[in-house]
Image (cartoon, rainbow, N blue to C red; front, top):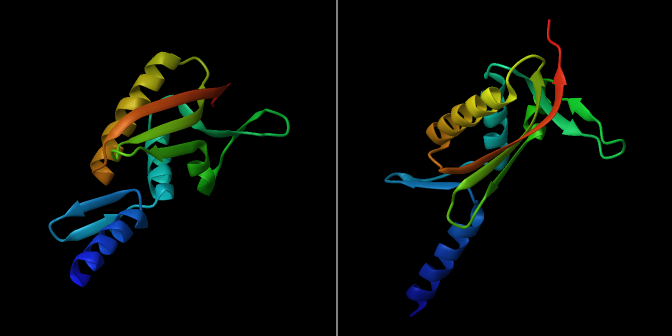
Length: 136
């Protein structure tokens, strides 16, 4: 009976350690949410027409272009009970490009790259265009 209790306790502990858990024949891999956010942010920046990620200032409601190491702040990743993830982007697009085309490319590229990188299923990608900027 004591063996059965410890097995049950072990399983509960293992599941609650990390949400983004991947299991394979060799063991388990835990991926921190911030890693997925950073990766998705860099994948988005590789897309044509994306000037950068943005954040909204709570104080004045103005979109602010994020620089360097803050790219992940313009991305939010949530995981549901089934293990699928939803990614939300806050972006600034280049002036003169088709927003619909840029966003469609962003969604397809990020979904493919994140699924390939993490082996987690991307359920949905939401994109919020926070601004337009002229690029040189």
